[in-house]
Length: 393
Ligand SMILES: *Cc1c(COP(=O)(O)O)cnc(C)c1O
Image (cartoon, rainbow, N blue to C red):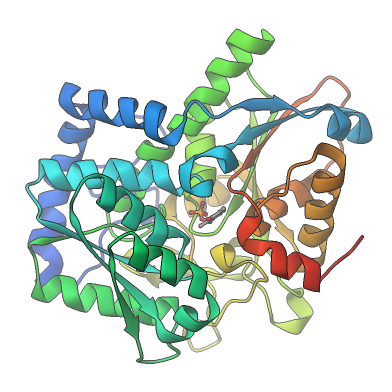
């Protein structure tokens, strides 16, 4: 067994597992017992691969960024998850999990969403597969992200504004879990490599198409057998996990995660979970999380809604603890600067989340012949207002 895969209880080293209320045990057990067989079945693979190709538009390009490479005096490739249908990597996971739900005979899907990206990806795939979909979204987020709220409604999803607590993602998650306990026939579709076992491993495997393609494209299109660096942003950690997975055993490939550092440590407004957090349980798994002295979850902050999460997937906690991967904090300002730089150098407007991965390029020094792959997790259309308001031209 690899040092970097889960054991039979769903632990990566000391992180992971399933810390869940008794009422959820049957649901989680059903998934634990079946997900690997389903993912490895010919029927699943055939449908998954076909949808990734014809619906999502995979393989996504591995783009040699000439202007960026010249500037940093190295060789930079961008893995273009931004060109996927619905504009990010999230759709890889939602297609996979909706197929798994169908194999389990589930009649409808529930999901939580913060900024609405995961909700839109879920509503999209549920429309495609003619399956009922209920999305829980904090009432405050419904207001802040009204265009995604409207998209989900147009796609036919039932969006439930959650008015408890701070009316944001954490409250939406609590409400979805409460609903799931009362309605065990639903399938709960988690949007990142987080949550109780088997979600982190399942989501990582569904997203590993990203790293598999990087490997193939480097070999076939550029005659390189592996990169020196793979860089990706980490919120819950799914696009990074999917980018890293194929390279975990290649110890000479440096794996770099970009954590959102918000306004910086001294302000207390950050979401750099591994750099600033401590070990604890959040949303069903043992991992790192942002907490105060009393062990209470500390509200994270990032300009980017997709990285504004107080926990991190357990695989990343393990890769951090074992030094297999390095996690670098990138501030709001640094991410904004990187977004403007990419836009003006390469004509690609990245998602604010992805801009954090690009921010790492300023912080490392590369050799001329290094092969550096940066995963561009999503496109920036949703962030244009923020970019204009915070222009760093
Ligand atoms: C949601 C999102 C992220 C963060 O989620 P991960 O699970 O860490 O990948 C990053 N980029 C984009 C574009 C997103 O929509």
